Image (cartoon, rainbow, N blue to C red; front, side, top):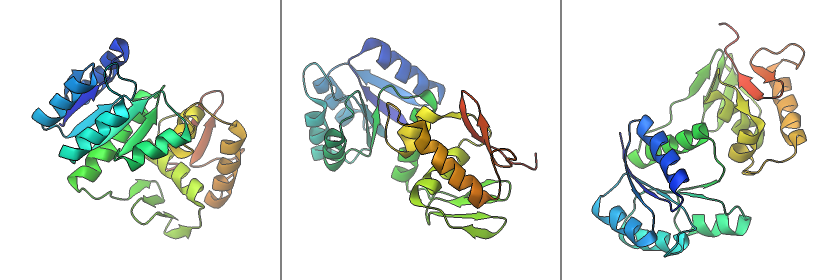
Length: 226
C-alpha cells in the first residue's frame, strides 16, 4: 500500500481517481487546489503525487517545480493538455509520467504500479505468457527460447498486451500507452504492427495462437496451452 496525494480540482474526476486508488489498497489524500496540494505533498511525505495541471489557484506546472524543489517524490501528471510541447516540458520539469484524460482505470493502475515499482528500486522480472518471455529491462523477447527480432514499437505493443495477458485491451488504450496518442489515431497503425508481430510469432489472423482480435473491442494476448 502506498500513500498517495491527489491534486485535482474537478470533483467528479477527483472522486473517481481516489476510489480507483483506494480499491487498489492505497491511502489517498486529495486537494482541490495547488497550495493545498503542495502542503500535503510536503507534510504527508507521500509515496506518490497525482497532479492535474489546470488548477484554480496555481498552474500545475508551477506546482510541479515547487514540489521538485523540496522533494523527490514520484509525480504522475494527469491532465487534459495533450500537446507534445506540454508533455515534453512537463517531463523535463520533473514529472515521472504523463497521462492525458480521458484515461482508463486499467491504464491508470498500470502506470501507478510502474512508477511505484521504479521508485522502490524493484527490478522488473520477465513476463511469461506460455512460451513467450518478455524482459523489460533488456527489451528482449523470446518465443520458446528463440530470440524475437522486434522493432521498438512491436516490443512495446507485445509488452503492453503481456502485462494484461488474458484481458481485452482496446485499440484506444494501446494508442495511448504505446504510441502516446490518448485521443486515438489510425487503427491502421495498430493493425500493421499487429500483422508484423503475428508474423514474428509464427501465426496469422486466421490462425492465431497468442494474439487474438476481439472484433469491435480490441486485442488479447493469451497462453495457447490453456
